[in-house]
Length: 101
Image (cartoon, helix red, strand yellow):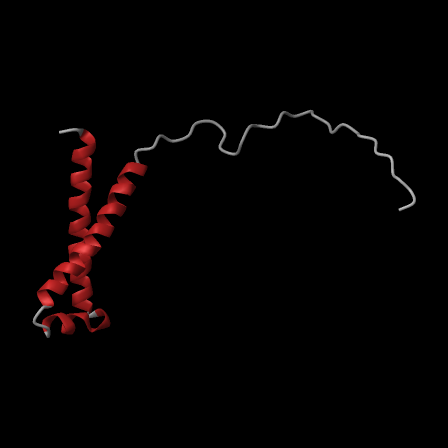
């Protein structure tokens, strides 16, 4: 299996695990009366699975993006443009003013 595919599968699994923890905390804290809505409804299990799955998609995408962006090489050299050479002086430029306007 290619390394990138293995990395993707691993990060997606981590994203869905984080989603399970997040939904567990939502239910434990009863945010927006969510626990009572889920336990009091006959389709509460479907709602719970949808919350977990939709959050899993988001967390998996963020987890994979973070993993990919953290692989970038650190920049070498100056980070604020090219260095300015010392000893340069501005050149004077003459401009004639027009009168009468």
